[in-house]
Image 1 (tube, rainbow, N blue to C red):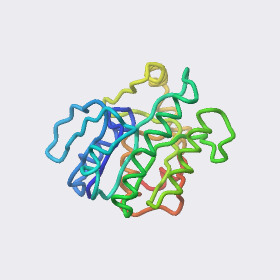
Image 2: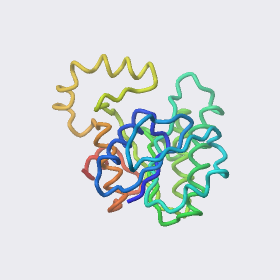
Image 3: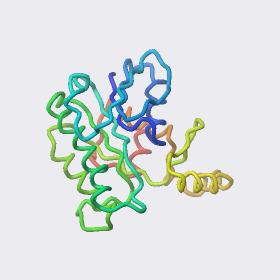
Image 4: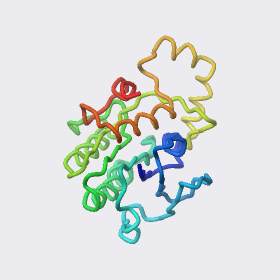
Length: 218
């Protein structure tokens, strides 16, 4: 399997990348982002590209993959809707549209979030995420939406968002209890990566996967 990853330096993206590198059936991993991941692996190739709204200059390098795992995103706190939409909707469709044209048989998995509003009428972030999901589902490509809730980082992975880092550190002492009392509500970076690979291989009965669905693929 050949895998393309956008956003491999973020918390979820780092976990997905590690699982792809660990999986013996994944023969090639190509990451696309504005900064390198600084991982060294024989099957990893990194494309550093600054303008994620225009991938035309690297299009030739994006064809022929079995799956694309789109993990790129930003926290909405403090952002104006136009700026948040530019990243959330703009970057995602700038990647998905050419991929649908280049390799329509590819599986495209988008990391959305629990609470995303498919009606596009809710709070700002949920509305923009819903708009992004809906646009992806209209493309001629096998697109799946992952809506994780709480994600526990493993393997030394840390969020790039200071607020999230503080949150994870504060919860660390009670994490074993949370995993015991809410086993179906918590995912790990490891588990999300494994679930993406499972859906890329076998598909899933739903196009939108909530936490319980993501766990069911493992």
